[in-house]
Amino acid sequence: MSISASRLPAPGTAAPQYLTFSVGQEMFAVGTLCVREIVEYGPITPLPMAPAKVRGITNLRGAAIPVLDLGLCFGGVQTLENPRTCIVMLEVHGSGGAGLVGIIVDAVSEVLEIPAEQIEPAPALQGRLSPAFVVGIGKLSDRFVLLLDIEHMLSSEDWSALLPSNINADGLRP
Image (cartoon, rainbow, N blue to C red; front, side, top):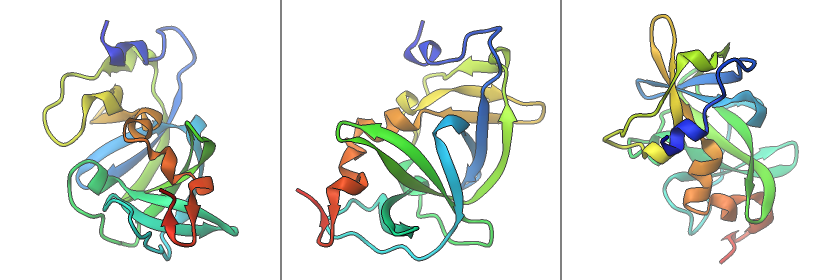
């Protein structure tokens, strides 16, 4: 059994729900249990000393939330703002505790229930996206959706440093 297969829902269990969205020309999904809200793309303040993937922080009801550009995270190009561009706020858990992280996406599509029988383990992918970040591939009637493991993706590079408790006025804490 591959690592991805161990993270898939068990056949016969209730179909988990996924929020689907596009980044570039590709369709992705994350489990809705980690999605806190979707906000309109707005002002993002750059963070000194942050990697390019970290576009900066945004204000969410008075809280400074770090924002990642998934286009850059996946080795592609920076996401360009369009009328459907938005920020998906995700609750993530890192070594420093839980917090919110925003991800910039080109467009949010819909919430889908994908039964375990329609999810295949992720193949050994070649290209920009590490197979460790993909839980599986959802087979829909007319397309495939890559199911992302955001927690694993963020923990792989210790993104926990980006949780609000680790950001101050000067940027990221060393």
